[in-house]
Length: 439
Ligand SMILES: C[S@@+](CC[C@H](N)C(=O)[O-])C[C@H]1O[C@@H](n2cnc3c(N)ncnc32)[C@H](O)[C@@H]1O
Image 1: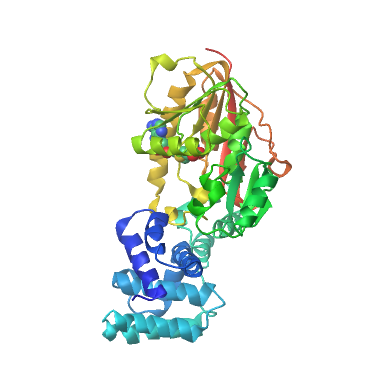
Image 2: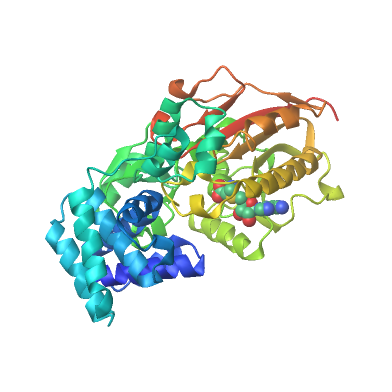
């Protein structure tokens, strides 16, 4: 029988090798464990990935063999142990080091037990003496484990204090945020039902229908979730549909809709009276939209397979409102998906911008005169956000609209909002709104 920490190393090795989503791999391994163990495994896996650049810097300072030359299993074992030594204060150091050495022996790599033992003991002794790089970009990169190109990109827009706040808020563990399905229940009633399942909730910060789940491990097994009384969505993401301000009877196109978080919210806001065409480019993702709409009993949503970059004559001038929640670099949601930062590159962002522009060009044609377009991303990147606002305004038929329903703390002088994750302790999001003033 493998120990919990040995399992953690196997998970980290598989994540690095497979390039698959962290949460999918975690889910596969977690099923066999009890709740407390699941929490520990999830925390250490996410923490090790989240702080990987910092951990590697510390390890490389002390090891003759650089991290990238180590065997995959040994590398992840040392990273995982270093994460516990440097970032978790409840586990005694000897327990961390002994367990690491025992794992090496159990996996029949006894010849490396001295190496692992030496690095971890050294790390424990030297951790307060290790000096960070002096150059600010490099320093922030190591301190917050954020690739230097991302810091460099933010450095063109934000000051150092803001960059530090952004980075540190993206390294926190966010609570799960839920949205009550107010067509089926009230928040008060839901609170009672969740309490019966020993789940505590507290009110959201600025969206009425939002709440935070303080202690939940397996959402899919919660009865009220299965019954469609609520769903999972970050407050920033909820703000997007609020800004769209849909009305009963509207004909709405949600172009990049899967898995349907915003489509289902829009359906709630119009009390299921209207028509929402929810499209996505991937067939398997349409099933997710339908599954969510069915669970929440929202019949006004029609999932349609569609490439939003290709013109469809039948849709010309057809829609009152269009939501473009485009594919983006996702840097605003790093607290939930920490591995994204190592997979993305600056050239990915340039490719994404091309797609975002094509989506805009094409979908503007589907708006009725005076129709409303909301553009949103879950990222913090001027190229995909502020610069895209400029791009949309180059179209003479499009005028910027003042954002409504913004909480006071997010009110901005600009006609768009870049929600930085530290402002209200939510995901980072960008939202802008436009009106089609001509044909
Ligand atoms: C940010 S996610 C959308 C999240 C969704 N709006 C929600 O709230 O649940 C972007 C989506 O765009 C889809 N997508 C990417 N390229 C597309 C295209 N050319 N046309 C339509 N959808 C596309 C992706 O498959 C992905 O599901």
